[in-house]
Length: 212
Ligand SMILES: Nc1ncnc2c1ncn2[C@@H]1O[C@H](COP(=O)(O)OP(=O)(O)OP(=O)(O)O)[C@@H](O)[C@H]1O
Ligand SMILES: [Mg+2]
Image 1 (cartoon, rainbow, N blue to C red):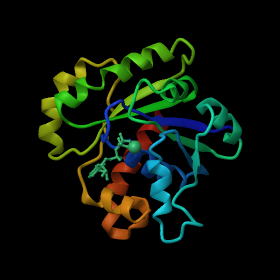
Image 2 (image 1 turned 45 degrees about the vertical axis):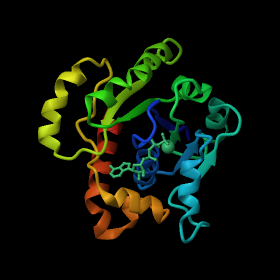
Image 3 (image 1 turned 135 degrees about the horizontal axis):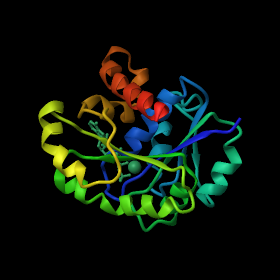
Image 4 (image 1 turned 90 degrees about the horizontal axis):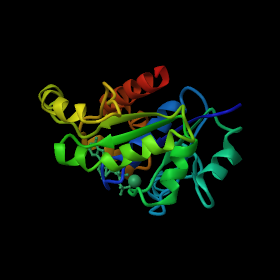
């Protein structure tokens, strides 16, 4: 088995990389085996699963990247259908460049404000650079913490046009349940009706990226 490998990256901190990575992985795990590779020295994804009430049965396996990202991917790619790499909030970290060099698809969470989007241009440059060694690399912006989906989307269209990286049609709304899920060491899929709307939007993201 060879995995389909995703990375979630943006040099901006706090835009929802780990939130998207863990919930995306939980959704992918319903389709085939999936693990998160925690490439962030902050260890947020690893911490997330430690909060689970049953740590022996985590929401998804989380593997800490110790050496290079590529080496870690190669070491585990036969064991999983899908891998999701959670990257640190940096473009200087060699791990981000390493991830871009070996993944099939990069997701870039962005907050729905022009300033946040402009702050994400460096990762766009990295995508362009990475394509010389990884020509098949797909990349998408994913709007996170959306409040009024339609009004916001209209206002942001202009700004999106400045980017060569396209945005997914689906995005994530701002929902307290995403924080709750992290606090409980679970994914939004594990929270029953409380997590239903969030799980639906993660499902839309997955449907789009798997079809891409
Ligand atoms: N859609 C959302 N709705 C509500 N809260 C959210 C949403 N997405 C993320 N958050 C919250 O925002 C905070 C930052 O999210 P997260 O840790 O996923 O960002 P990050 O980009 O991984 O941060 P870092 O750059 O530090 O790695 C967390 O408290 C998280 O629970
Ligand atoms: Mg993070």
